[in-house]
Length: 237
Image (cartoon, rainbow, N blue to C red; front, side):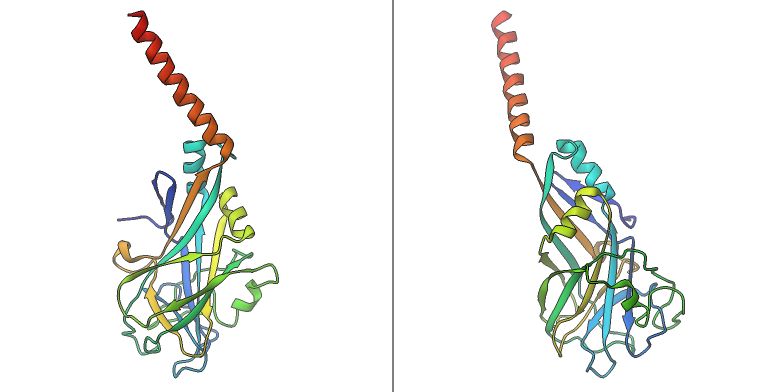
């Protein structure tokens, strides 16, 4: 079983699971749902009201892995994608899944609390719809708008805009908070959270890094030196 936030490194790729996530419901503005097994993004005009979701990732392990691979300050972020697994809206709190568009935003403020509420037993502690605006600022940055096809199963990957604030967080190994919100009047997207029973269906942030040009040259020179050293040994034997 994967532990939240643990990084899996495959060469130049790091895969992060959230260390916290929650959805908020406009129809229940003072209620927290941080322990739910699903997250939701839904347009405010739908029958069950609007939903937004927030996810927080700890990128320190990714930075450490890339530092070990290429050296500190010898790599940069080339690509970032968000992976989500669609789910069926089995609880009456959720809107029916409907195709549409949603937005992803990098949040400057990482201090929101996940909370312990669920759809059946909501709580008042942690992030809520009423509290969410207090964690938003003019420094937040759009990472793009994306299409959802209305499915209730299957895993999808969304390539995010690698905005400078997001890149800076990842290079420094900082916390990364993402806000998912409706981008049109029809979308209703339900997807599994980090609390879902199957870890393979948890949200994931995939970071693709590449060596800086200087690091690549250094690695090439090192390889050349190693080959030359072996050849000298063969000639001397």
